[in-house]
Length: 485
Image 1 (cartoon, rainbow, N blue to C red):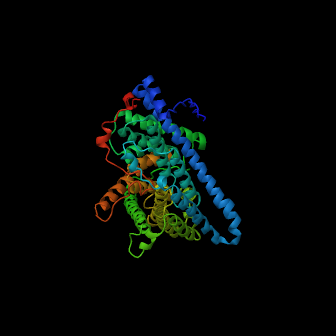
Image 2: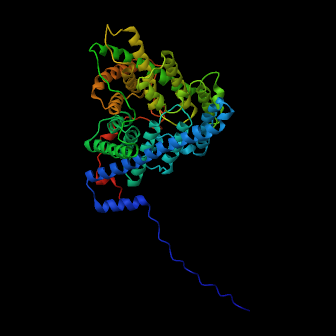
Image 3: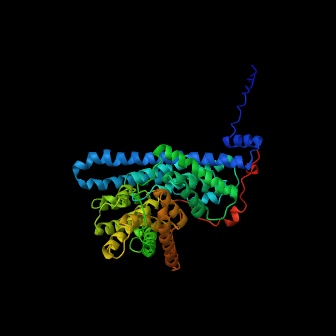
């Protein structure tokens, strides 16, 4: 009888454990013990550089999608008839709908969930990439939205990712989100000052310590430099020279501000209404809420495409048409009024149906139309022998800031944005007059219970505004912000 001899166990050498990048970075910084000023500089360069490169890529993606959709695809099917232009937004809605279904955890999740998780919830670096691509498809195929909302959210996600990498505390996550938001807007408009005030005024909404403000300021410089290298040092719009021709003209700008508040309220309520329609909360249209989420952008794209058959100027971001209005080229008064109304409706449908984009560009488009209409009416009603006034493009420029301020509730951002776009100090006082009246008028209407403004999520950014006064009083960038190993 043979005895079985057990085989000796082969001991495999243990593989070294992979240390996460964040832990290695934490150990490295703990060894260096950088000063608070050095840490601020590191964070600012990282967030600003990352956001700047991402926004440059985002704009190239928009151009690529637009070329693919309206030059190659439409060029191939346009022989079937002009009606084929309506197919492009519907196809864009199909792609966005499929992305919403595949990546619903990234595209549909509210950003407030990350803020309330105390930094414990991790996000993937692919999240801002998916958001960026969905927005590029939306805008490139004709959705009546703007690139600024996605730019701000992509920048905020990059700020969150760096906070995740540096393992900062919960209080500092919000500050890094603001730095990323400032970087996103600064790169999108080539307007670093407006980016800073947007972060302070809209995203954070509180008083800051000096280190916190330094981080926001430095985070806006880097992406603006990257944008100037990629797109040139010229502003986003080529605006005509502006000058005030009469001191009595200030009264007219106050009237424009009041009208801008009415347009802002109508715009905000239209967005809320269409979102309620597609959520099935409006009587008689509850069946829309039962549609699968991927189907809703297709339906919105069909609506936009049908409107574009008669009015193609409403497609996409609309910077080309906006430039024509600001250059003072003649548009009939009736056409400007129609463009104002239809752009408002198509933007609301685009956002409500699930396309990805923001409302900065549409709000400025509406303000330019309103200002051009107002300026043309004044030119007819007030002969030059009575009162010498500025031409309609001047009122269009001021109207852009007034409607934008009333819509997003950011008067300082709007004033500084138009100042950076025009690079003309003479426009400041008319802007301040119109924007002040616009925001005042919107606040008066908001006192009515049935009328409320938009939050940032309804503006196209999955970021909810919170009261940060108590939180940010604790913020101080210091070496202790790095978690010990």
